[in-house]
Image (tube, rainbow, N blue to C red; front, side, top):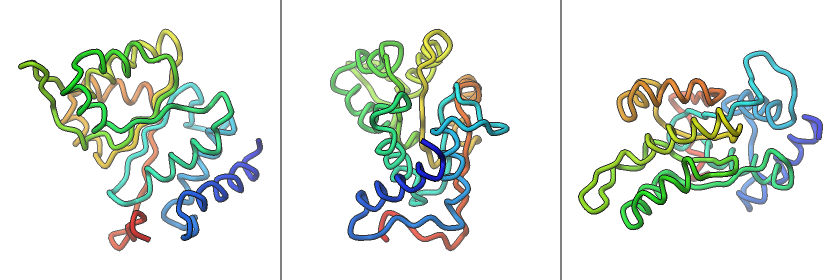
Length: 196
C-alpha cells in the first residue's frame, strides 16, 4: 500500500473509531501521522529504522492512543499488525497472576506488541514481591528484539527524564535501541482529542 492510500485508509478507520466525530489531521498531528505512514508502508526515510518499533511521546489527550489504534486497524491483515494491551492492564494482572504475566508479555511474547500509556501503571506486589512490571517486560522484550526481531510499540505521556526516573537508565537505553522515537508536540492550547 502506498502512503497516499495508507492515509486515506487511516482517515476511514479513524472516522469509524470516532463516529460520529471525524478524525482530524491538523498541524499538531500531521507530521507524526506522515512519519507513521512512512514507517508502516516501508518508505525509506532518514532517521526511521524499519527494524525498530515506535515510541510515541506526547501530552495527555493529544491523540496518541487513538492514532496507534487506527494505525493498527489499517495494518490488521499485514505483516505489520501488532497485539495491543495497556500498561495498567498488565500491572493489574500481575497483581493477581504474578510473574507469568511478565513472561507472557516479555520473553514469552511471540508477536509485535503495542503497550499503551507507559507510566500510567504503578509498581505492583504479588505475594509480597514488589515489581516494576513494565521495566521487567521492556528488558525481556529487548532479548526478543535482538534474537527474534519482535517489535514493541509504546505510547507515553512521560518525557525522557520521566522515563529515566520511573524505569531507570538501563530501560531508557533499551528504548532508544528498540524504538523510533516520535514526539507528538501539542501547543499549550492543544485541544483534548479524547473529548472532541
